[in-house]
Length: 116
Image 1: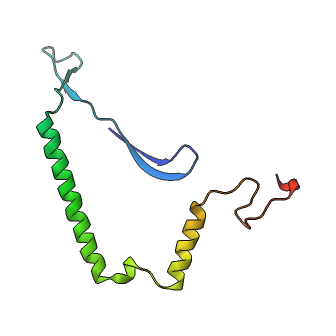
Image 2: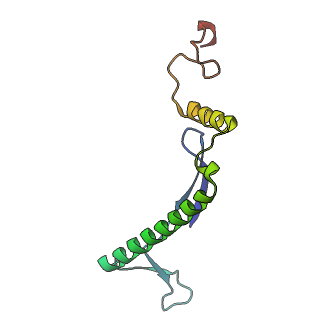
Image 3: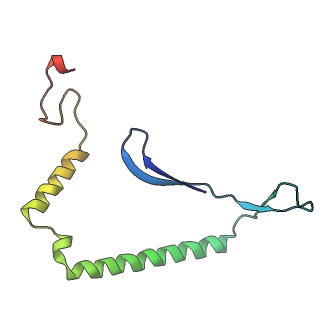
């Protein structure tokens, strides 16, 4: 079961998923009218975990290699040089910086006592 969430606790846009995965199976019993019974699965073996870790690491390595090769063909994506790109990056960085108490983000100056 998966729930798509769009916001974090502070009403910030933060798309993410909540997933509930049972560690077993729901199986029918002898009586077809009875509710399904939950049968827990055994934990995975160490070899299964190792194989999964190697598979994930290999796929991530392959993905990163492809992305690097694609970026080498388009260096402007890797190092934006235009004034607009630099301004955009500076604006994003300013939005990430925490505000100091008593300052306004709009002008980054102390607020007057009447606006508090």
